[in-house]
Length: 616
Ligand code: M6R
Image 1 (spheres, helix red, strand yellow):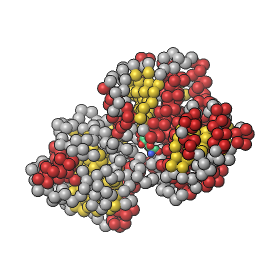
Image 2 (cartoon, protein in one colour):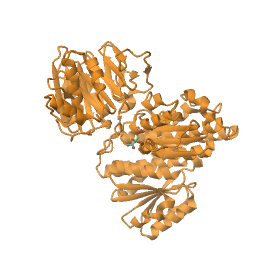
Image 3 (spheres, rainbow, N blue to C red):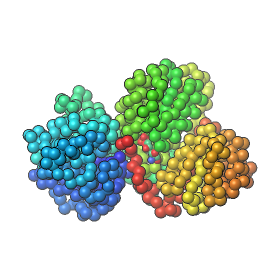
Image 4 (tube, helix red, strand yellow):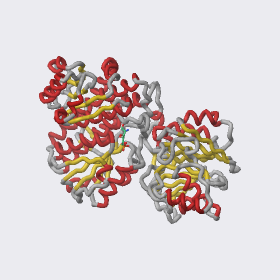
């Protein structure tokens, strides 16, 4: 949830750290801080509650210090309120070591008691401070920074990502990844190196990266890095890779917000994803990163799809695709429930995890459960080298580019395409689909990016509907079939960025409770396109109107009958039935964005949220 960045090289560290923190701000934004160190080991720590701008103001942009090594942190509070004091970095008592941390030290109360009994005075309410004191005590006993981190790591319960510096080792960063609390990526530069929670802070400087695996430790200097295991021995092979991300994609360009930019990027994101996964001529479902999973799909007799938030909604639609095209039972589960249930799994079960970041802790823990049960695993991921891709037997990458807005948009629609392609491949492997159907299904994807571009080109027409909806305190989103997950996603987008209470329901459920809420001040957004069980949806609309409820409907172009029934209609181009939900998503994202802007909300950094949820 927090963002960590570290730099060692010859350039001034502070401005680089601030820039890195801005790139990671979507991971947490309630306080921020840096600790920088000169070549002589002079240390300066500055931290502030609030957004990174407050820290930047306190540092005057950071040009004045000559420090060339440092660590920075942007926080999403778990232990202790977002105050200056609780902000990271945290030093040990004598400033011999300073740490930044992402995760939760689950035994921190016990460690705190033990350290207090030894005379240590704590200056914050955080769990992180225990790490700083433990490391400092280890260094005071003569261990070097990297060894002190390894020794301390052995005492910590829970999952953590940690980066530390010490004035007694100028130019050295020590980093650790312990469990699934968040990634640690090394950015390998020329005469300088970076450490960060994720790629966003690294790719403006270098595309050469190494991801730390669970329980790996790194010692990083300007010209070198070593990676060891818990025993301090160098790991066998280092998977250094070049990430295919254009650094420009990390910028907002002419857009006022990342969310809008990313909504608008969907035609390209879909087109890149489609092209990477299928070929039309010759017709082929490629899925180039399925790896060893490719040959094992024939043994799959059941699919369980897991994810959280928006990715869970993608998984919900993925179930429809799998049932339809692979002809095998498919279930979905919220990963945070799946991991604690006694889920019935066996080696014939394919577990498909969906995660934009590849770092969501509940998804990773769900994957651990699946691995222990001997399941085949495929992950749908947008992050090259993300942790889910390292755990799964195979990956279906979405090619949506970096997503910086906390509210996921382009990665949702790209994940839907990936799930569709995976379902086709499963159907092909199991002999459920004939070649003619596969060709027809691949061709159906081709016009999709163009249709999305058309919808986006006309999105200004949503301004009036958004103005009306922005007055509401509550909203209902309704859909049937494949439009049901999209209704859930529409409601999630609305509540995330506009703070309007919104619920997504299967339209058939409406009469079983939600309709009691309907009055003239409680609008409903209904997905009523040609294929969304239209006649039944018409009944739902009539029932809402009979209770004085205002109805905004998404309809297929030219559907005059529904247009007459509703207060407002948003038209979608006619498209292949299975892919219709992807199109229906687009106006719902635009509406959420517009409503949030009218209400003056911070769409890229909604309150209380963080983009990557790496703690429970
Ligand atoms: O990185 P992931 O796809 O695993 O993230 C899952 C959810 O945390 C994420 O989709 C969240 O719900 C977003 N804020 C949705 O906009």
